[in-house]
Length: 402
Image 1 (cartoon, helix red, strand yellow):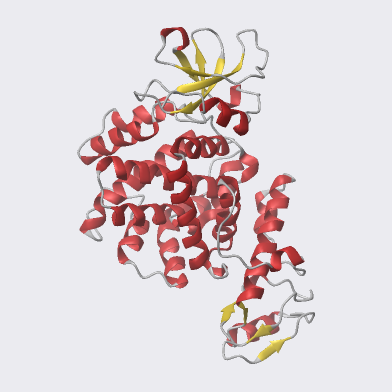
Image 2 (tube, rainbow, N blue to C red):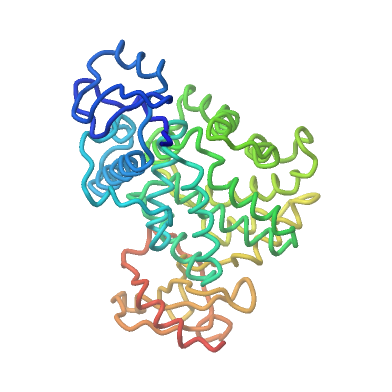
């Protein structure tokens, strides 16, 4: 029987365990229902490499992720979630073992957030990360514009947590940019994989920083400075030994550095620029989000060297008004971009609020290259108070000429 390490540090003292605990060699240490009562007990478990079966490990992880999801939906503070212990009960639904990541982008976001939050204590992370990578490629192959739409909409929703949305959106933008630049498929794949885990060393802190109303403290600045190296250490602990991937993670905030592996320099540049691009468009309590068109142009204006090509490719890949972001049309209507157009500045949009300020029930796609529906200006999501229906967007997009 194969065993998997359990997150001993996340076991709550005095609470019953929902699984049998084994040593790495297969000796039963604690039966289901028994508890870890003291720090000395915890140290003994560490000394014996406390483990559980694969089925128990996956079920326990699912229950943990379910609890995180519930707390986020209830508006719990990130610090409260950071103090979360492993559950003491595993619902039967979580006992179902399925390596495949099912559902859409938000389902994948929940799974990835659980891995990032547990960082080095994540259970069986590699197969689950591979499942996420496969799902990303499947969803992109099915519909790039819907993928961008879902993720840019999620970026504006702070109840979902920021770290996993940021990682997924970076992965998608990196992949699209790499394809525009003609990178080979393997290099593009490594870049996507790297984007998913580059900030695992500070995932909880990333969510906390996104919500706090003050500037980062000195201790938080230290976390930010050190997170790349910490991420590398965590990924090595997972068993990842691809030096290209680890090199990109280590230097993704210093892309211009010539240290590390020469073959990763272009990937570092893409990841660093994407990381900054997505971060600029995410709201903070201390600042408003940057408008997408401004964020895109900021990558091009004043760029030098290979950054010019990367910025241009990224602008072509996502557009000046990416799907899922908002604009005001010359006719006075408020609209959401739903599909990239023939040019970076002419997306297809759906009007959601009439010029009289009344929400529109019927979704009709409009080509902004038509002067009657031209874009007057971009809008921050903070100025739009209307929920957008993905299902109605899908129906409206079906009428766009192919």
